[in-house]
Length: 193
Image (spheres, rainbow, N blue to C red):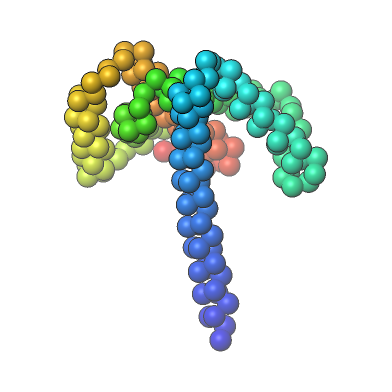
């Protein structure tokens, strides 16, 4: 009898995690499709204006949610900005280059070239966090990147500017993830390997 509530809690927690992951994946996919539609089908002229508009909207929605006590977070403090630096710059770089590459590349090619983020993240984790990886994992990532290179080699609409934007987007995404891990490790007091 005493095991039933524990099992229900574990199942509930696992279901919640699964639903959260599915919601995140669906939201991410829809954001990409909507941005692609706005930038190409509706021929929105500036990915920079779209990005700034999305950032302003995010701030307004978060502020309204805080005022309605839906979410809680501390008020702006410049000390926090200094503690989390360079994450804000990496976010802006990631956002702008992501929108630029979404506008200039087809969605399949965009998805293929995003695979380089995995390799870049591994390299930055090895360099910044001094993390080591099992050879099996390294071989798997190299295989993924090799497959992405083969897929990209058949791109008939090759555009140097688009490829530059997507590779910069990969680099910003990788750096953002690694520096977030580093900052969280520093904050929580966990030793960064």
